[in-house]
Every structure is written in C-alpha cells, then in structure tokens.
Image 1: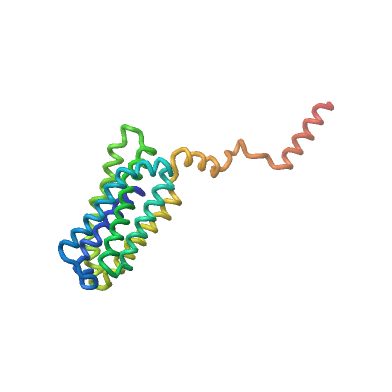
Image 2 (image 1 turned 135 degrees about the vertical axis):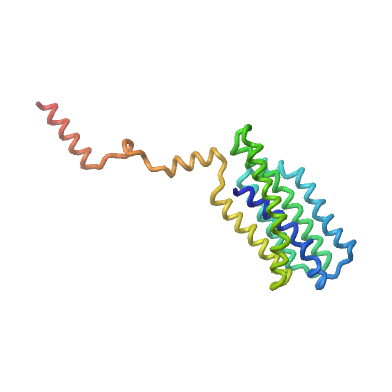
Length: 214
C-alpha cells in the first residue's frame, strides 16, 4: 500500500506540467520545441537515476533512501511553482527526473525485503498498479484544480502529497528485521513472565522459611 501510493504520486507529479502547460504558457511563454525540451530534461535525469538509484539505495538502505528520494522530488515539484522563466522550469524538470528516477529502485527493494520470491510477482503487480492510478487520476484532477486555482498552486498541492507520504513512510515502514525487534520491544511481557508483585515474593519467602523450620 505504501509503495503503491508512492508510485501513484510520482506519476501524478510528472504529469502536472504536461496537463497544465497551456496555463503555464500564459505566464512563461514556450514554443512547442521548448515544451518538448522540458519533457526531455525530465527523462534524461530520470534514466540516469534509474541506473544509479539502486546503488544509492544499497548505500542508504530502503527506509532512509526512499524517504530522501521522495522528499527530494517533492521539493523539486514545489520548485515549479516558483519558476519565472523557461530556464528555471527546465532546471526543475531535471531535478524532478533525478528524484523520481530513484523511486522504482526503492520500491523494488522494499518489495524484495518484505516478500518471498514466490510472492514477488504479485507484489510487483500491485505496486505497478500505482502507475495506472496516477496516470488516470492526474488529468481530471489537474483540470479541476485549474478551474478554480492557479497553475502554481497545483505544484504546491502535489508536492504536499509527497511530503505527507514521507511522514507516513517514516512512521510505518521498517525492514523486516527492524520490525521484528521493534515488536519485541513494544510487546508486553506474557502473564507468566511478568515480575511478581513485591508482597507476593515476600509471602513466598516467609512460607519457604516456615516450611524449612518445620
């Protein structure tokens, strides 16, 4: 669920600019060629991070790595709202691609950590359902927001979704070995292993003394 939500947010974020491009062009004029360059900028860094993201996750670990990646791309998404020129938009697309490119390696690592081999195909299928959800939801949602809000606010809202997800992830996701150790720490002692009240121990020792004396 957590991982599928992250993938859905990534596909929502990346479609915000293409869907809102006409509204953006009223403030930042761009030719068709420049609009294509914005998409190319995203895909270049996205492809690079697809390859490098796995190494990054191996170094940072799934929990911390995915949290950093999501925070990075959410801030890059929010940066679009501050853009005042084509160059700044292009820079934001480069940064967004770099962040989102690490999303799939992180999601795949999370699936590998939690699911045995025989269940990973099903888990990956559920995870990838997030791509379809994000692609289906983005156009009508963005169009609806454009009817009563500025295009800049859309990037703020989508970025906020990503940052909210990082809080959810930080609270709920732990690798299996950490989850097990946390469960042991938080689990109350079973009744037969809880320390006996002091008065019970005193009474028991007094009884043993009387029995020994007799």
